[in-house]
Length: 33
Image (cartoon, rainbow, N blue to C red; front, side):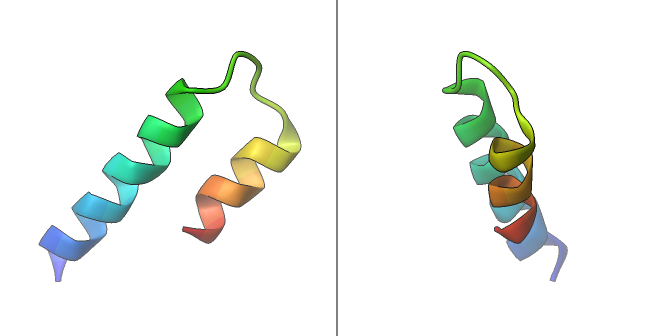
């Protein structure tokens, strides 16, 4: 269970790091994942 959650969080943070600017849309997209 925690392994799956960890993988999803890592993917979300990787996507956020790829963005030059954090905005509400980027954050919402990451939270959906």
